[in-house]
Image (cartoon, rainbow, N blue to C red; front, side, top):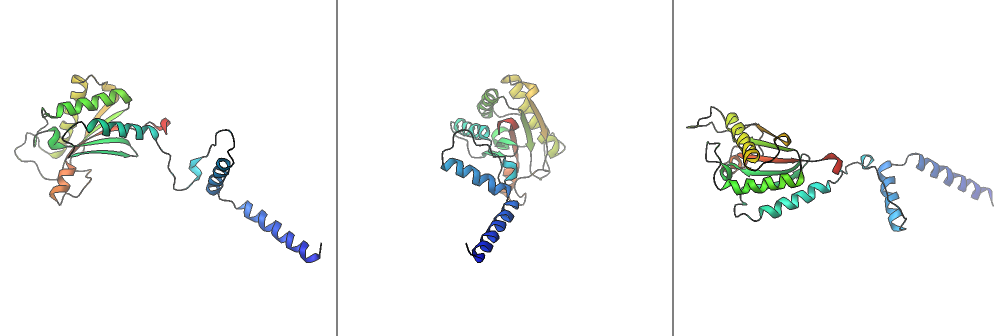
Length: 212
C-alpha cells in the first residue's frame, strides 16, 4: 500500500468517526426502523417518538371513537350545524344552539332529545371523562331571562348535563359542565355565519393519555 493510499484511508476513517459523533437522534431512529423493516428483523421495533421533531403520537382510540360518532350521527337528518372534531383534547361533538335550544332559552327542544340520547349511548360505551361547554356569540341578549351571554351559556351546559344524568343515567361523576359565553369563539363574530358557529354546545370526550 502506498503512503498516499494510507493517508486517504486515515482521512476517510476520521471523517466517518466525526459524522457518527454528531448523528441526529431522530434520523437515526427512523433509519433504524426502516432497516429493520426492510430486512424483516423479528421482534417489535420500539421508537421513542419524543426524539423525532415534528411527529406527534397517534391516538388510535380517538380515531375509533370519532368514526363511531360519525356513523351514529349519520342516522339523523340534522347534520347541518353539527361538527365532529378530533383535537388535542380528544373527540368533540359541537352542536349548534338552534338544534338544542330555542333562541335565548336553555330549555331543550323536543327534537334534541334523540340526539342527546345517542350521545349518552356513546358516553356509556367509551367510558370517557366528559366536559360539556356552552358558548355564544357576542350579541347582547334581549328579551331573555338571562342577564348575560355567560349566564345563558352556563345554563345551557348545565341543562345538557342534567338531561344526560337524569334522563339517560350517565354517571354524573364522569361529567362536568361550564359556560364561556362569547369568550371562546371559533369564528369571527363580524359575520352572520361566524356568529352562528360560535353559538354552540361542545361535548368533549376527553382523550385517555394511556391509549396513545
